[in-house]
Length: 581
Image (cartoon, rainbow, N blue to C red; front, side):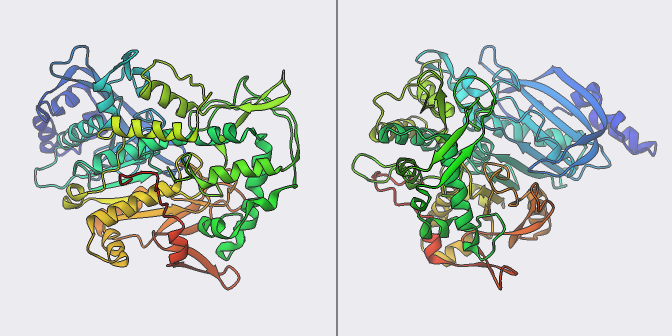
């Protein structure tokens, strides 16, 4: 029916329009009903709507655009599973704007999608863009809402859909649906892409490590190494509890601001951006902040403890904060930056760069005792309470929790979810063998997922896939198809509020498209200042392992190989007998 509809349009000399193809009947005829064994598409579930002159606002990951599109929602189920329904959402460009492209998009936090918020980033480039609800009940339902069937009983279908199944199924269905909808000939190439950040970055890697569904992927600040990453959110809290000091947020903010000011010029240019956090860690001692005065005005907000930025919500009300940076405050900050250790002083996990905000260390003010108190990271608490203890709650007490407790939690999560959530398999032979390309970006000042986490994974892939080559030879071989870019000054999946003049790679998908389709490999990645006094300024972002450096009073830019600085990114996690990829 679909081919007949399209052929009739061509036969009468008419180019297909949005109105011609954006109908329930046409979409139904285009559904790939037999594309995956064990999956049944519900042809009665189709919702179709045409939208014209849609204005998409500028985003951190794509520029503003105006376009027409056909919105489609449909459902499918897995044969043999009762009450099973997975929703897919696709935005399809008009026939005249379709550029033989398909894009899968990811989520964030514990969400497998970003609603329709990421879909414009595909349509503006002539791609069909898709999102999945993972089978969790709606596009607004997070995986942790359905992870447990009851206390102690895991919903394994939801777990594995979140881990990697849902995105694979969407890609297979979405690509064939795209081919059918636009009546692509069998020998016509459909380019398939992915874009996602944070949890969406992990979701991207879950596919790259298993399949060759995509020709290229943009993965940002991936929250992989899940067993480590989620417990890492509790590290700052445990440091404060262990050292018995709960710094006012303004004190940590003062330490951060003085660090930024001191480390800004280390890259050869004073511009409000710390581009060389490695040099900052090597050459700046935050003990210099002891005794410095700080002041923050009172603020109004929600009651209760601080809302962590990785969870969302409004910040709490705080009183006026004034005082001087204490030795105890600096001790807390130093311990956090030094990374997680066990009781014997061995390194358990890496940490944030010294230019990152201390979000995990946020404390809450108790009006009754007139003091600052512990405020447990929401996402860290949810992980331990729900995914390790298997209790349907996000509440967690850190009473009696030690550094060794954190290590035990990491090991438990690592073992329990190694095959589904850890997502650090370093052998990418399947994806690479299919010709896939990867652009991996990570803000150097990320406060939620440490930038060193991405460096560690890139190095793991290099050492596993090119074990017989020298470091330089292996790096050269890897960047032929997998490139990592550390974004100066950027926070978690966005520019940093503390370094607003830093760049962000807003057009990375366009760069990837040129790499895949035209073989234009990006030596540097273009970045744009999206806020601050330098808004609109263009930057070049260096490909790892090269590092940025300015000379001639900040007028000459180059990407340099600095072995001492590179080594500063390599953490010796000697607390483990197993390799940590």
